[in-house]
Amino acid sequence: MHADFDLPSRGRVDGRTSSITAAFFQAITPVIPPSNAEVEEALGVLGMASGSCHCAYCGDPRTEWDHFRPIVKGRQPTGYITEIANLVPACGKCNQSKGNKNWKEWMLSEAARSPKRRGVADLEGRVRRLEAYEAWREPVRIDYASIVGAERWSQYSNLLDVAVAHLSEAQKVALELQSIIKAGLTGQQA
Image (cartoon, rainbow, N blue to C red; front, side, top):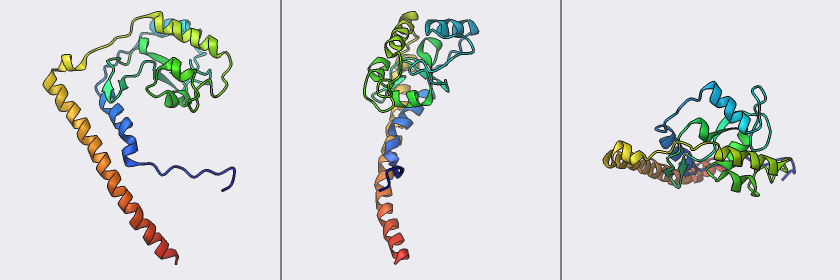
């Protein structure tokens, strides 16, 4: 195969389990919008100023704000919510690569697109600023089951299990259809 060409991965229906899980919990995660003063303070802790906000992990232009501490881990909510003490400016590459990993372990790992792997300059300085941010203020953390009640929480968790089971069943059908389609395509080309 040509050195400049990679086929896109086929993907799997059940490969979206983590996305579905994240969607289930993001849909109920509280959002507390920060005040302008809180954003300015957060940027200051990160060594940034208004108008020069960039990815806290690598320094590339900011495209979004990342949940610094994951809101979902192991198919369960961590209790962290969407609020300024749990958000940092990020680029899409870093946010996607980090996923729900611990920020520091990920930054210093050889994970695809991690700052270390990409050879980001002043990695130690970035880690120190993020450590200061982590210590800046206590993030809000809640216990969903105790707020909504065990029965309602169980109902919602069961809906997630059903959705994941449907993805698994759909993957089995997809594999069958792949074979049928491949045979039909081969027959057309003969």
